[in-house]
Length: 72
Image 1: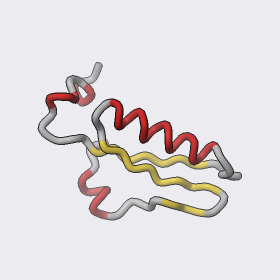
Image 2: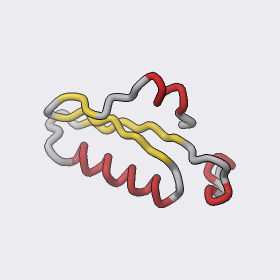
Image 3: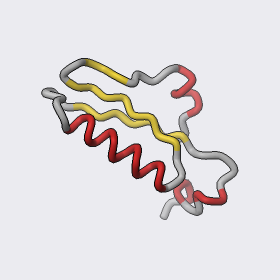
Image 4: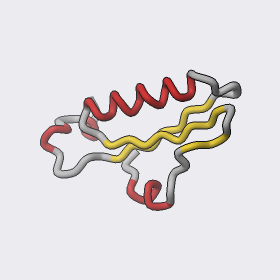
């Protein structure tokens, strides 16, 4: 396991992970994937923000602060 992901329980602060999900039709899979990614990250003790690109356009757009703070 890479050191980045090792022993998250004792980490002094939570890592911030940014992710993007996309689907041309964007009816369900984009949002299902985003929910699963956020859930898995939370279980591991990470903070995660997901930007979705679906049929209604882009939602959850990352701010410059999100990008500056992101670890991955």
